[in-house]
Length: 368
Image (cartoon, rainbow, N blue to C red):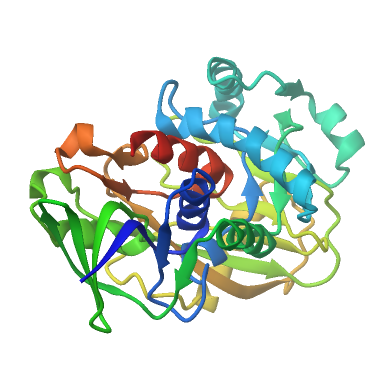
């Protein structure tokens, strides 16, 4: 059995960030990924948005790590020349209840450390986005977009330059707590003994944690999978900013509504919606969803032309709260929680995981 200082399982944006942070601190780190390449799961099927930290419950890890991570991520992108843009976003209200919710959103944002939200009248909104319809809006100038693949490539470069080793096609079959650390057995038969193990397996993180021999199962929540489909706008977008509908206070949303985001080339996409599924590999987009997307988008863009939306792609959110529950916080379990030395489980690492990745990495590094 080979002894390794630290093993990180899962080479998505969070796993890469954690592996990089440990390696930069002088740890010997092996990063195990079951697929043929890094970043092919949740990290490659999202909106690529740098979130400001507006909506999350005050004091939650999502709020703290998003605000910290946003600053770290913008600085890292500037330093490394990673393509990104502070395009800003509008949170738009088109019902009286949405309009009434805007002041509460501002207050929550302030308590989270986000002080740049600006209320805007419909007339002020039209000066910036002439085709956007609303009863009122908030403008978030610190929201942006990032090339997530370029980000992950930079993280991997830092990790490998610090002596880390990425091993693809190395899914983990079994983990067991031992006296000297945690034994890791991979699907290809490798046996490792690691002083530190970080489970950053995304959609598989809960099932992997449940299989750790020596970890009390009561620490592992049920995994839920919320599929989100995207539709792509054919032709040029008339918008320069991201557009998000304000949440309805009387409705539980597993996401942030069918919003408009842009890629760095200006291509517009709409989504994701929320569809609960038992299958984390269910990534087909049903074209029949298009009618619902048209209805949602036309609440804030009435001029959306017929036939302008094309089925795009889908992603799966790795949730630890179900359809009738309030959205759960990030669950970052270290030895102080479960009592297993050197083990950290990262569970429910959905949005804003991309924005928070560098802050999550620092948090984990402190735990181990």
